[in-house]
Length: 255
Length: 255
DNA sequence: ATCTGATGTTACAGTCATCGTAACATGATT
DNA sequence: AATCATGTTACGATGACTGTAACATCAGAT
Image (tube, rainbow over all chains, first blue to last red; front, side):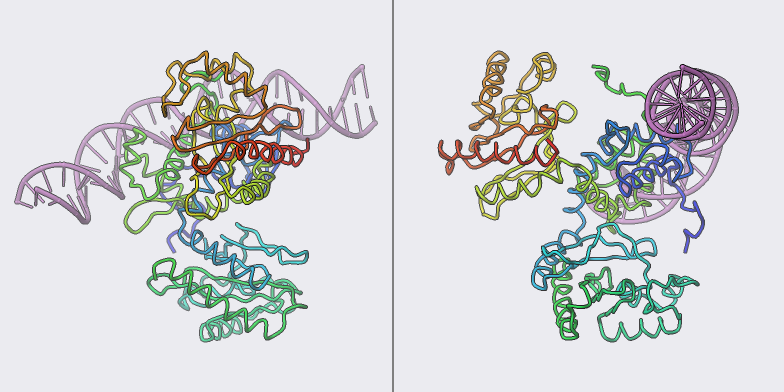
């Protein structure tokens, strides 16, 4: 694995790395105080102060009058530039939007990042009751429809990524390792994944793989919807629409 | 002014600051090589390498197979979080969109950042010929409709921000200092600013101030359009619509 | 009003992370 | 081959960064 240790990666500048941690903490917890950051990251206050000053100097964070910090203008500039530079997101966004509009439910895109499932693009429909989704949210790879990404990895990598202790989100969460592996096999054969309340009781989620130019799975497109308004035929329809969307994204990536 | 020097700000971590420079360079110049960054920033290659490795380790940049760097997934997460945290952008975006849809032209939001005009939100209509706009683009404060922000600053601050040598973008650019100051006075009285080809020959741009809760000017809303399809009455209409949009944004900020 | 326990801030001296040099590796172009 | 780019590794010197300690400021409690 190479980077199995705590602070293993070589050639990483410690102070820069720590500053990024501060930045990401502010991203996750807006309107946070210096002391809270120091506590959460187990750092000293002077160090955090110096880092916040540096980040503020560049506009990445902004200090409010009340003394709390939140992200600043430079973070917006950065994110906008990133959206145009990360092919996957740039290509997927309009396709996700059309898909989501069509089914009038939440659609999103997930990738594997650091052994977790990470949401990097989304669409939410304009209706009162809808599934909330959040870019940047991380989820375990073994749960619900997130497991689709796991299913298309080599078995030995799967084994490494499935933890010894599987967290039981709901009564339907698959906690048995053997059952999970069998389910992964089934997903690979079916080419899509359906989760009926495995992570949240009342939610149904369908996922489908997005292929890169070389045929490898690089992401998943998902639709998530409240169970009460999602019939079996809806699920079937979603799977088909998702496969179509995934194909379009793949093509957009230069398949 | 306190921070008038070149590298004046105290308590700024040099290595973190330099790493941010690398990050922002990648944001501006996608698919850039290590050597080019080192050259552009006048740094040594090993230093840039260490910084890129650190940024890559956190997913802020991504190294392509060809050895070039571009922004990574974490930058997207960061930017999305920033959009929801920066009040001005969050509030302005939907209002900008409605405004832009209505006039079927490009609308954007600008603030003063580091003595320049910085674009932090935009809307572009879906039509073949439209004004291109870019979040993160910086423009001089004295030119075209960008000067609206300058107009509402105290006179002595204006004097500091107007450079000795004014760059002549077009034949219509106001290069005379006295004329510029007179124009700023006129803008303040009128409450809006019209630029007819002062920055780009064929463009008309109208701008209006956005007030913060305390009545200070914190941003400008602009509409930019090709001159040939923009009549004087259009300009008048834009000014009114802009004032309406600016008022809505101010209210959204808790005016 | 005084005390208490937070907060953010400054200063400083030690040391370790960070730096640049130099040497090497790799690949493209002549 | 030879040249001139590129990216990479190693290592010793040094100064940027660190934590400690002391101070400042504020809120709440007594």
